[in-house]
Length: 412
Ligand SMILES: *Cc1c(COP(=O)(O)O)cnc(C)c1O
Image 1 (tube, protein in one colour):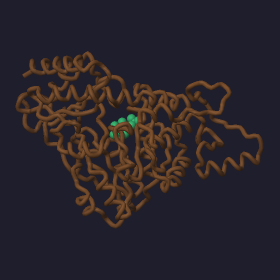
Image 2 (tube, rainbow, N blue to C red):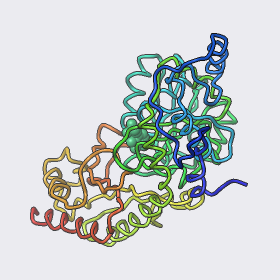
Image 3 (cartoon, rainbow, N blue to C red):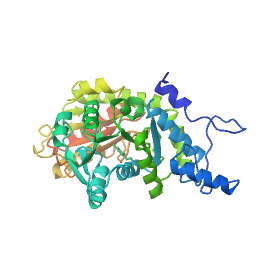
Image 4 (cartoon, protein in one colour):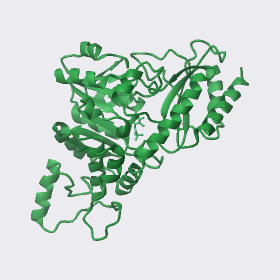
């Protein structure tokens, strides 16, 4: 029987051959791996080339610490499906490695318009140079609409659900089934939900990427990414991983494993506090829209309820331009008047830091700069803010945001 996520996060990646039975996998710091004989070196080289679990001739392949984390990913993100996992030094590097592994010059790639900004950049720079064309599709496109967009050379559909900044939910099961029928691969970025709140392999995708930097590590002190693929894609991924020398160190892998042990309880706290703040924002004057998939007002709330186990701590809200005396076209900090108001709201907060990334213990607030990040469906609503709700008391966070709105009100 499949263990529940809370139990899995405690149970996985614990066993190690050792006389000292400490509770945690130790940190292995390594480059060289020693052999007892040349015959053993040759055998292990073959095992590494095949990608056998835990096989190593050099620490770029694995150490017991990194192998334990890969094993944990296969259990938790793989969720009972036959999958294999690789580690990369950041979420972005995991995405880049996976796309290089699955695409070749001449291929066509379809990417959700509200994709993580650096992923968009990678497609438009490296992949374009390499001869892969990228087309961005509207985040609310149905499986039928995506099928109509397919070209004979379309190799892969890249999904993100909920997507970055605007949090659209895609009908991933329908899109994955359509793509499968047409011989097209599906890859999803599962950053927002993490496997605690969503299991994309149950939806039928071929591969997922996880920024472990976010909720797995959970403490804003380490960068790492993971790619998890169905076994059929493993040889291509492993080869690219080896060709580029993509690997992580033992200290960082240890920190991610340490974070994992509390990921399930942290996620529930993020979820509950974020919902409380989102509900408060929904009834506050001056807010045009709160974009949180777990709110009934979210356009794809039905899909969220059908497919997700719960929510995380990241969501957005849109200022009502009329209420704040802004031009109807002021849809981000590019507008000088909007920039003054956004600074008043974000700067000087007691509990909300300003900064990128999220998924750590602390709350963050940042305005979205969407003008350069959307092409299929340009952003035409008011200024959008993204908040990450941390593990503080939610009432303190609400009071802090209210102080920010009061500071804005003084400017109008
Ligand atoms: C943060 C993020 C990434 C990249 O992770 P890093 O470890 O910061 O490189 C990828 N996808 C999404 C959706 C993210 O939010």
